[in-house]
Image 1 (cartoon, rainbow, N blue to C red):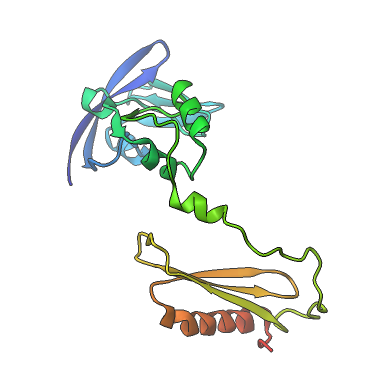
Image 2 (cartoon, one colour):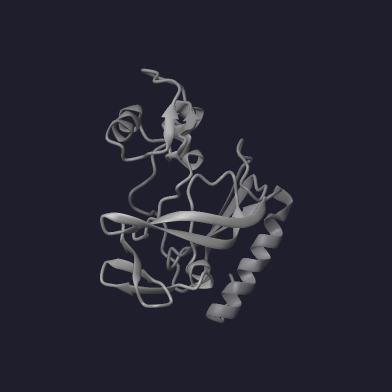
Length: 220
């Protein structure tokens, strides 16, 4: 939304040090502060990574920040403004979708044990209906564990393709369909996202060109 200067409190052992970052980007929808090394360096500081910590030193070589590495491999620097720490108010069905459709018991457990922070549930339903979960659990015809036909003898001899869609939820890029191409010999699979079904032929032509370029064969 804009740029400006930002004050952050950088962990330094048992204390913290105030650092001002210049020309930072303001994105109001991001619930945390992501600090790039270039911004710290632009502020006149020196950054070094030693062992399991990130050390920040001023121009005189004095350590003003010592940030331990987190469990996810990132170095966490807290923002001092209280507004950034305000929890997001969210209902449980939305959180269920964001967390890849995990069970209600798991959601309650991670909230109770503070595995996920920065959110506040506005409801705690004992049960709810999820269309995606019901669809995934729907009865389907059994799939044979052993193939009944002979396997292809080389890459590109036989390609299996499947077109799926439309999805009731579009991607960020506006795609509603996908098409897959699976090589019978190697089981290598390529998936392409499509906005409309009429793009399927173009996706196949791209896949066929890739097969010829990378494997020097034509699809039979």
